Length: 78
Image (cartoon, rainbow, N blue to C red):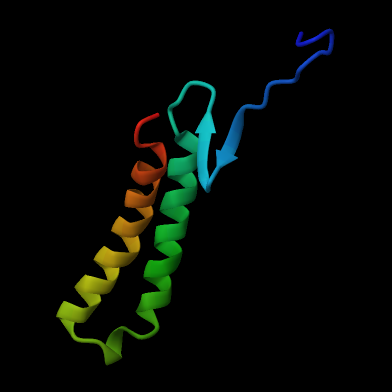
């Protein structure tokens, strides 16, 4: 109850693209992050033949690490 009104708690909320649950376990966020990373890896598969091995490694690193690093940046200092 807040100010005489019933407040319904949500199992998770999204803040700047980071999904936070009540227990701060980030299960939903990790599931979404893994899905997003696999999506980008499947997209890279379609152009893999035109890329060198080194370029492919750099792209995979950039796509995956940028997603993981974004969460750290949003939650820094929390």
